[in-house]
Image 1 (tube, one colour):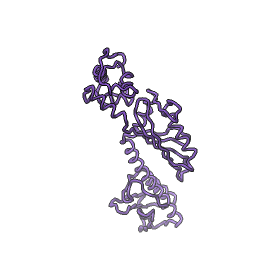
Image 2: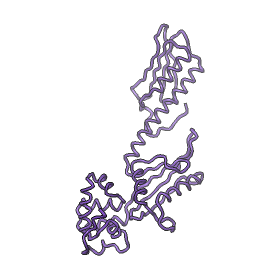
Image 3: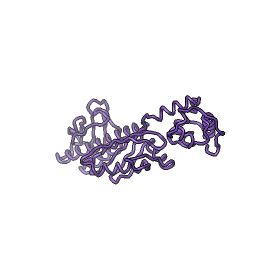
Image 4: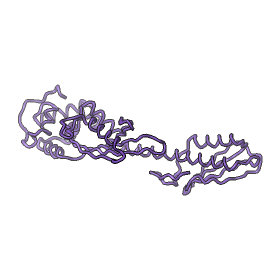
Amino acid sequence: MEDVQTIILPPEVTVPDDLGISQVFEFFAAATGFRWATLEIRTRGSNRERLFEIGRRSKPPVPFELEIDDVTTAVLTVDGETLPSRESLNLLTTILGRELHRLRLLAEATLLRGAIEATSDAFLLFGPTGTIVFANGPGDELISRQTEHDLRVDWNGGGPQPFFRVLCSRVGQLLEDGDHQQSLRDRFQISNGVEITSELVMLEPGAEGLGRAVLAIIREIGGPRDHFIDNYATQHRLSPREREVLRLLVQGYDTTGLADRMGISPHTVRDHLKNVFRKTSTRSRSELLSALTGAGNPARQGPKKAPGPDMSQT
């Protein structure tokens, strides 16, 4: 069995079984005509042994040692009436090694997916054709925000463009030029003032012959907008809850998204928004965002008296 570098699990960790090993063993016994056989698999550094048995013994047992890989050995014990050939033992060793490797990869993939889902960064996996084939929770949320709010960035002086159009263009560039470039890093400011970075990493195909893929890691970073929000909230005496509403509003959340993120009802969100409008003397979400991200930022001017908020915008 070819050596394989461990990603997460150390060699001595025994991964859970599925039907694969027992089916391999049963097929081997049937193909070689054994009436009774056992297979004991041992992993270096682990106290756990896996034992598989089929049939009923009628003759004295004959054991055979199998070296599956650097950390795994097995003992095949058969009824002495029929003995396996060296070729069949080599084939069994190879197939068992591949099956154990598959189980280990499945266990590692489960751990990695759990880690990706737990992070607040957006992870998007693009397949060989440049289409998104996987997104974690924050990645799905980012896609939804693009669909609902048309997130735009100013890219290369070409004026505001949809963020995902730019991102997919960069992914396509990396897929085409993957022989010379393995990663791309960009920094964007979305039209609502949020600053984000994207890191695109080329994932080369393995021995399975899969096409190239690109992993996109997208995260929000601190920027000038944080200073404006803090000053603005302090200057207008917003409560901690109202400050949180303001921050999420800047990030592009609608009423439903605000409610889900804050763990409150949409009705309570509307109440907080009304208070924010009243305290900041603004009448709509767009006017409030303009006050934070526009050139004439009212956060530097202090509150001013204006008509009451426009409730139709809540």
